[in-house]
Image (cartoon, rainbow, N blue to C red; front, top):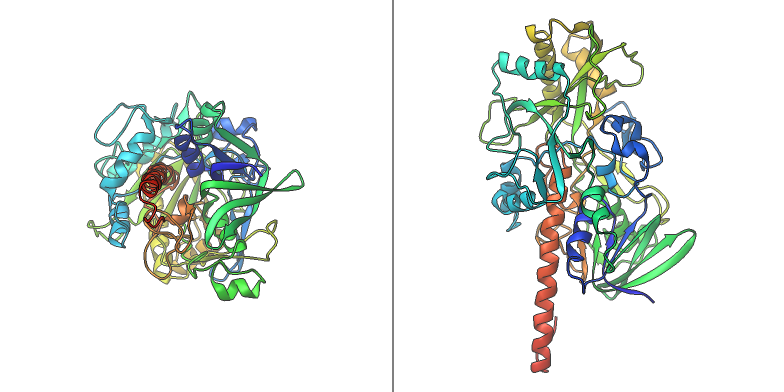
Length: 525
């Protein structure tokens, strides 16, 4: 049976980083297994083709179960089924989150995860177009740039925000997050710079790295409570491969908990009911699911405002505190772009623009569970969006804010009719009905294998699965709480930090191993 030092499951935003960093040591062998396809689809590289990738053959295109607070709608949940994972189909927005997010992680019992601890890892990955600073790096693999040929109307959105009293913010990842400005994106030479393009494709020739696509991992292999390998399905054939050091699970917030549960790690009662032998009783697996949600105001434009091919379509934004509490992270994020982001049932105009408002943290918590013991079955997703009336009220306030911005003089040369929700939708009750019918996920699921030391934690602060040896989870599922904004950059940071933790763990084991040789009576770990 083939052996590798490490097996990484999932070539997404974190998995690509981990595979890159571990194979920097030519003596370390890594097998990277990706259930999706190679990233050869031409549209991946074209920033303006974001929307066309959703629901395509490189999207898992998951749906939630009927959502009880959204009139039993099944929410579409896009996830990348391709090298690079969701970084190959997302809107490429580079947002790290707020310093409060990471300080809160540490306060929850996760030493080493404060903002000051995380910042060097953000900088390590980054090649910042604007140059180096206290907040930005230029020696990393990931290209972070301004949007090339941003539409003039996007500047009008920023002007409108300043007109009604918000600060202009030239850098959402700098000294402060609050205010209005242009987003930066993960683009290089006018093309999408996914985690695969940045961290994986440049190192495919390393002889110590093996990458297999179309490989669906069916279960983890254990000897007692130690992970010793994986089983995966490839081209209709079931394979088993062993690991010398560790298995690193980087399949994302939906599929990492799914694979843990299929392998006997999860709530013992639920696993027994499925006929799955229990390896470790961890009731938190699949729990603590969090996400961002948004609702849009779509306006007809009397001038052509179509985005350039190098644009991701979402060019400007605003972070704000809806309740004036400046001691915490912003609770609302706005998106603006020269596209029409419409729910089914609305007729687009010839040209239009969209302002969207997103809650950076919802009060509801969802879950991921097994549909069956069959690895080919999709997981069951229950998001519980808008369970809280307070969340609904914030979105209503957000719609009114977007409308206020669109009525400023900055938009006088562009403003046509309001397409959605429509000028007739004015009362709180009517806006609430629109929100429950038309809101969308922002595709930022996290938290289902959360980091911590409490009874519902799945991994410890070094991302090792509680009660299991030789197994870590490294992806957005380990976040105990959601970050303020888009989650791709934080997930890449997690991959960077995890790689150092893994290397440190191997060094420690090597030192202990040498000590054992010198002193045979020493008890090895």
